[in-house]
Image (cartoon, rainbow, N blue to C red):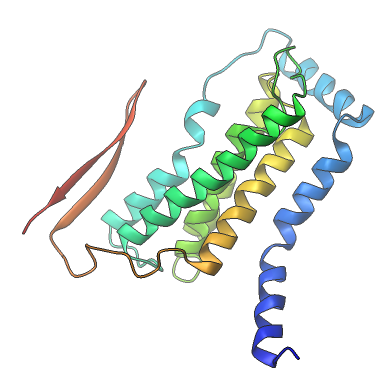
Length: 221
């Protein structure tokens, strides 16, 4: 017999994941369909067959910049910065791992003829980062929390405009990113692991340059 609390937990978990599960379901339905091929042709026709930009390589990280910038400016978050980083790392490792395994197993050809199109790795990362931002600030700053999805969606659009992915690739990548992050925040792995929780003299700032991604860390005893 399942008690009321267990039923409520299961219902809440399902409700949290309706959107990502729907994205994955729609993406699977559209995969290799005539619709996605025609949709891609229309996009390229509108932007031009020679269109190319690298902005999608940077947009995936905007929600991460927003996350730590909000911490620096004192916006109240759900978790301590170390826990944010912990869940961000776990979510990205798991979601990217799933995405890469599917790429290697399915070997769908990209619109430009290159291999491993399905699902979109950029979309997976972008929506993973956006989902972390959402979970951290949805209670205290909803506009900030959901703004990450704007950049994640734009990333997916540019992946199609760059002729790197079909719409099904983007939808499934987005669904995987959100779903994994929601599960991480639901189960909170390594919840009690935080060596900096009592320290008020630690600083963590991500740094992005044209060719590298890194961070600045300072800890005072």
